[in-house]
Length: 412
Picture 1 (cartoon, rainbow, N blue to C red):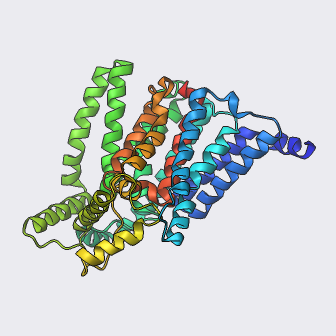
Picture 2 (tube, one colour; picture 1 turned 30 degrees about the vertical axis):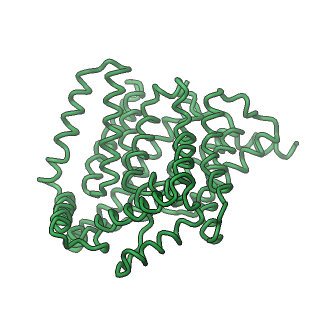
Picture 3 (spheres, helix red, strand yellow; picture 1 turned 60 degrees about the vertical axis):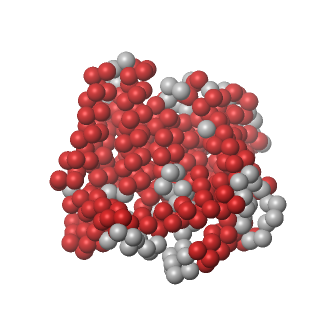
């Protein structure tokens, strides 16, 4: 097709892929509409590339193909798990949220893989965006220091654009990817290498200023994976020992020197004391999260094999609140990814979900990608206290960064 040939001569397929990735990262931080645009664009761009005969999905490595196809199962589960469906509107909302698990892998399959230098540019761009975001949040914090610390003492989060949980997870991954990028850059690129190191350390410190617990847990878990990789693959014991010491000391130093971190820790300690005294209510942050786990677990126990259906989960949760906690005004869906899936689709659905999500780890070529393993770790750890993949930001975060690692030639 002459028109497509002219288009791809102007914008080569790989440049279109990098454009979509750039839009997705800006969208994750500041503009959700751009996140949606990036997902639609990558699908259309991939189809056009395939139609023009510039790339065929079978040219990807077998592991890449099947890892991407497995992600689409997370969408198909919601689409076809419809028996006993009562709340059609909620089911359609779940379909819309999980649709990127179909669109992004399909688009990536039809496009050529990322090269090592492309991945370095993508990680550098992510670091730049996160540093800009940190300055944006930090300046506001400094100008409203007293008021923001007061809301932190009440268990609320620091004001920031977008979803604070998913942003903190992205920042945690930014620190891990920054360390990986720093190690991979040649010594000749001294200015780039030093800039990456400074940005990475800055983000690690700023995550403690943000004091979002999911992000901090993801950061420490991701760094632990990198340290294990250093020992098992790189045989670098000295660096691993030093990193382990820093991981242990970092929260202790932050508690003494970072007011926002100290306020969050003190609030968590106060909530624990309230629960021990039997005075915690569902309106409190941690007590409300714990209550949502109990409700989700109760639903799962009532429907252990197949769940109540993902489309019926919200109404079933609300029924449980009305029956067991009628005075609680703020009703939460289960703040645990695994309980959410189990309550909606039972043990069978959870097994399919986890198998599809982790399918890439069947292939040896991905075992040595510390960035991918660390990202998996961050998402899996966050799923213990958040339903990470149940909103558009979490889905966008997961599908894009898993897809980027799957199609990168450095994974071979």
